[in-house]
Image (tube, rainbow over all chains, first blue to last red; front, top):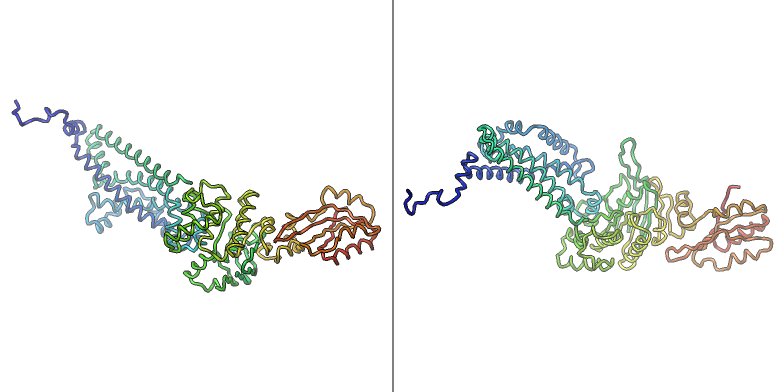
Length: 240
Length: 342
């Protein structure tokens, strides 16, 4: 009973959006939005977390005994801080830092607010991983750098970083996978994202297809991430 | 060029302190190839690192090119280090980078312009005969080539002094010789003063003009290479010299010596260069009643000179042997009696 110029979706062929809503119980746009939230938290969490983590790692490497800035106090403080944060489960950290989140972001929900606990959680983890990478740099290389009159910053930027880069990329990859797990929890508490989707819409509504879809998405994502990390690392290492 | 005065350095160890240097003094003149030899743990590595300030003495002074290191501030020290090249046993190159990148690094650190860096890198690579490897990655090179890159890197900033930390200890004998020849070329053609540490006496013999022997944090003997090889005094020096010059009765001839019933002496003779003009051994042989038996003879080249070493068995009456010894001493040969177990 259709009139010309008024074509129903069914007549236009396969309607993906309708099928998706029907099969998974949510709109496709909702999934895209959740993916966006996850990538937002993951991306910024990684960038800020890696920056903070690198600074912590630098203190751990440079201030340790025999380091170029040997300083027991600075090393001790950072070392203990890293251990404390790393021994706390993320869900505890998350609620524990709510007051801080409130001060920094102004609210305790939403993807941006979740960046505060995510960075606090992931930076010590990345710091440990990067510390190990930096410690792998042969002391001989550093001695050679000193002997040619390099300043401490030149030693870090021109010798330690390039030498540790390949190993640090792998460390970052490992850290990113850990961060992804944390974003799921953060999302559930109030940040949105794929994890939130799986728990709220998939688990609590007994929506098995959606639950499975989110798992598949996460598995594929982690696989791709690891592949990328391995590739980049191998490329950086290819000439050794 | 380099003056170390009464340097003392102690490292705090776990159970007990390690006395790396106990009142060590060292004087290296411009143009020297000065070798420090010692077993591992003798303190030579610490002594070498005093010269570019990688180690600081607990007491004593280090003066390099007229500048006392202890009085320099950080910036002045970094500046001085650019005038002191250093070469390492394990090369310490950036393995994942190209030869060019490695040699250019010290120049970049010094803030040289790109164009000039390119030119200078090419120059030093030509000097070490690795021009064609400029774009190769260090990991693709052989040990000898890596050390050439290490030397090129050390020479890039046109240093006045080159410090070599067991530069040839990781290399096979042939490559060792090639690298030593290269160091000699650096010394002769660029006028670079070289201070090297090694546990191989062959290295000292081949290129050094002066040598210091270290043991337990002390310099136990020093002097020109010919002096030290000719008349080693300390036991440790004798052990080192023995690795190059045999100063014992050859095993095979011990039986001959033991079986001899007549009065005898076994003498080690060293002739340096042409300082002994007369045909000494021929004259000894012509001595009535004296039997001369040559148990061993070698020739060593060192410091542009030649050292001939003989082990002679002198058989005859006591007075005749004593006269022969006198004659040897008078002729100017270095002589010492060798002992053996009966």
